[in-house]
Length: 131
Image: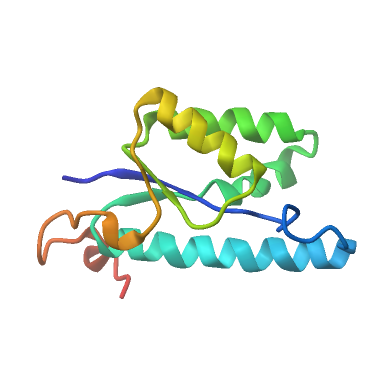
């Protein structure tokens, strides 16, 4: 069964590091996005469809007028239709998303290995050329 998987994780490490420069925030964001994209690739290999909310900044680049609440509301709409939430790391924002998922009855897992494979040898990732 193909599942829609919401791939969540901390973006800026603000909960862990209070002595952050603007450049450190950017570097943390890029590194954390990379971790989520690597996880998304593994989700695809298991035969499922990932949603990576960290990439929503691309929409903001186009519109130029989005605020943090706009990103959160949009991402929660995506989360509400997902079959499972995969949590890679925690932050205040991720904790809010976990709480939202639990209220909606959406299972939360913390390891990619906990996601079932769609079907042995039938993962959609191979069809898409992702190895």
